[in-house]
Image (cartoon, rainbow, N blue to C red; front, side, top):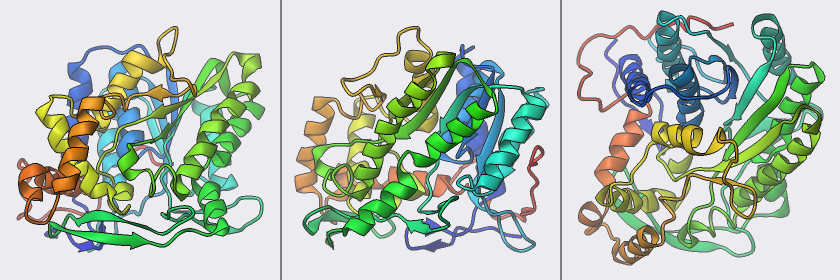
Length: 395
């Protein structure tokens, strides 16, 4: 079929297998160009098919030949209908890993469920014995609790008062004000239930009970803080409460791992174009301005660059550098005072008329469509492409 991008609001409902393959190959090439990385032998990535999770898996596998198991929830292809991009990403990743003799298997299903947890544990026990690193990188808007059966849905709302600020429709370039009503207590509880640390802790508890964690085991989950500019809708909003819970959970997990000298970390990463961030009001405009400034300063990074720096300059050092709250900070370049001061100045000037010159809306749109395998110069989108692609190591 001829596969074209079809958008519905802030998501793209089609994806291109050859474009997704190109994205993965670019990331693999980047990691290979950086040389050997010292990192754990056996790695479990929960949320492994896109974004930071995918980049973590690539960094482990192609930086240090690590055996990886990936867990994700993606839509497989049907005749005449494309798979979700994470499906094609994983197919490309596993194909390349297997070519090089690197162990890579995947499980597709609801990572919040007991069923998928148990299926993953059985695979680890059978194939790897123990896990040295768990990367927790889930980004789901809903969670059915495995004990209560309640379906929780997260929200993107400010706490206390309604919030009004500028945002951009990145499809049209229109900059306009948007108002978001304040959340309820129920909104906070639901968002924490979905995006907080409970499921991360459940995974680690189950792995430890089955003796599937090695001594000196590490686990890392990803978070975001961001600037004052976005805090009302992000860090001081419902998502922020969930991130607070996630970050506190790192200490709880570390306490539970003392007998195997294990440690749980939070890595605070930089703002990037993702399906999730595209749906958060204010964030697309902030990222458009941020990218412009970071590129001008030669410090712009994508997921793969961030994960390489996390692995080589933070997570696997004898002494892991953290902030006063115990968090690893690889958002340090984004949060540089000179970068943030310039972004704040541009924010005041941002309008529909000025954004094309003072921001990087073109770069934002390109990266958004790249997420789904589109806008790669090397891919011919006019030719027939087989939408049916299999993941070689899918269990």
